[in-house]
Amino acid sequence: MELKNVTASSEPSPSVRQPESEPAPEATPAGESDGPVSLLLEFDEDSWTKLDAAGETLFVGLIRRGEIKRFEARGGYRLSLGNAGGVRVTVDGHPLESLGRAGEVVRDLTLPLAAARG
Image (cartoon, rainbow, N blue to C red; front, side, top):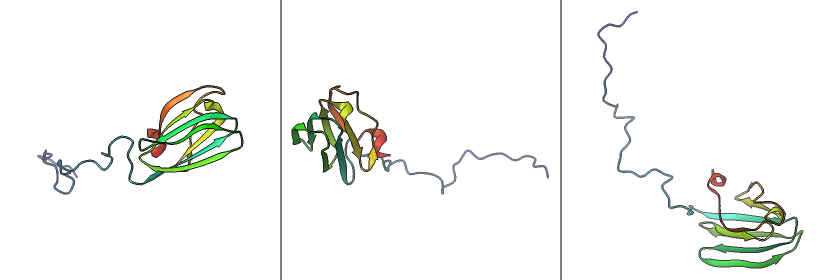
């Protein structure tokens, strides 16, 4: 069957058209989320650690090898480590790749990372 004299309409169909006034669902300010963000720090080596959330310091000091620290806060964290390669970091149940090499210092890393929140 051949169709002749058929033209495509440039008008979008009403069922597909999206209202332009509504913001996209992911349009929340950077670093903010709907619920609390869980953070798990597992220390394979000693590391000086500083952790801030919501403008407050949650922890600062030396954490020894073998210790595990769990935190929960809204909006995420700022993490500094004196031995980034000696600490395993898990955000909302998702392990992150190493934040650095043994002995490497990382300062004021914002968690969760964009890729970690899926």
